[in-house]
Length: 304
Ligand code: BEZ
Image 1 (spheres, protein in one colour):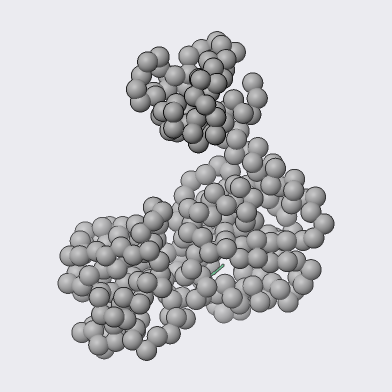
Image 2 (spheres, helix red, strand yellow; image 1 turned 90 degrees about the vertical axis):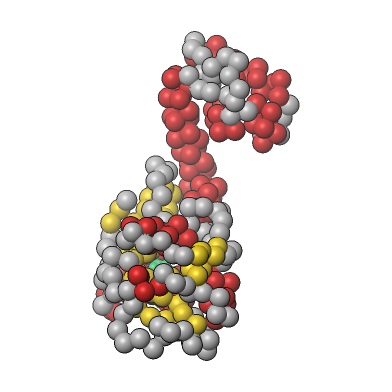
């Protein structure tokens, strides 16, 4: 049994269809079916229910699928890590969600650059879910995101839980309200959420924050990205719930108000490949925690 057999089987199981799987694998369907047959012969058990459309896995197939996925993730991890260990130049490729750019990310990077001038840093704006794939593919080495996804191949640390705030157009009836706003005060407004795709995303985190409080926004507008959401708030199309660091995005047509709910938070999550214990990452974490300490920002080091 070779790694390619695992890849063939996982693709068929994911697509639930031989034709689509063959297309994804850039091969014809008959050789793909033969490879799966050979795999079943070697294992001495059926992995796929004969004749089922869409493709359905047997109990043995379901077991094999879960473990094959893990092995493939480990193989990808091993490839990326071996390249990283062997690289002569020290490099650190950072994936980040856009909102972190308005908070501490620029300062963290400036500080890291000053202290570790030999490391070449590059940046990729990616959603949390895109970071997951980019880490596995070796396109980034660290991701800063906001969703608590599950994946055995990725090490995740919650750095801190950032308060959520409300972005309002300047002339809004609540813009001048004294004190923090209640989430229930926001029900009459169109709630603008981002990003629309891929899901789950920060949009789902915001919607869950309302749902957990038994609140249903009257109207929800889903937009592609943060800058569009804030632009539409400025245009008076609605309000948006955003992380506190967004106050760093100063616009004359938008104001920000705190929320009277300490549980309304969004985590900032550090993600890296599970095997990656490189000095670059150790140093990056040290820089982040030093900045939190200096600024008195409450933080955690909770490994998920
Ligand atoms: C923060 O705001 O806490 C943060 C932003 C980017 C990377 C790490 C931490």
